Length: 118
Length: 111
Image (cartoon, rainbow over all chains, first blue to last red; front, top):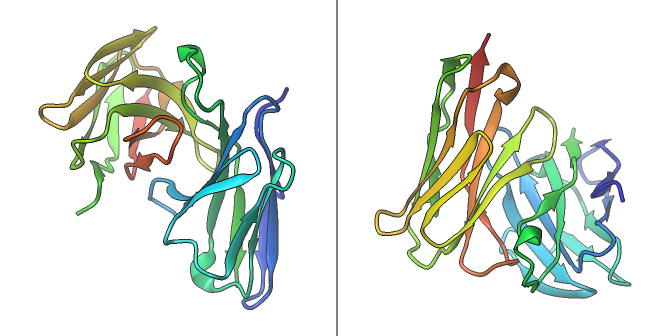
């Protein structure tokens, strides 16, 4: 297993276009998280899944944002009608939820998808 | 007020120095604490994970949590130029739920 994979690494889009990002978590991880990071800031929580169920969504996730994890494996994050304020790094992370194995605590992040809206 | 406050730096130290990085927080319910290292244009990499108060050591890294003061620290001994990165603290009320991140401290270790 090579860790958390995100695709594409970079995306440049025109304002008003729709974009979709993909995240492939570590295969045995049942929890998957999306975060957004802007320059000079720490990651901000967007949403997370346990298996295919979306358990929590941030207020940051406006109606233009939707995330899915249809089979409890990979996840997609779609942004409709992109705005310049959506320009950021979108980070995906995964973890083993509800484990008693302390060696498996914490998230593993992917390298992110950098979105630029022009 | 942000949930987690972290001095953005930059912090510049000579190679071999002991580095102290800190975060303060406002939510007394936080009980899970992490430190991440992030190189430019890369995803964060988990360094340390601690639960509740106390110290945890891993190689050159020591994490401390003082819940009474709502203050956490990361110490790096014998700092190396390869430690130059942004260090993010993160914390959560419940394990494996959402974490709240600080804005990161940029560290530069000069050879």
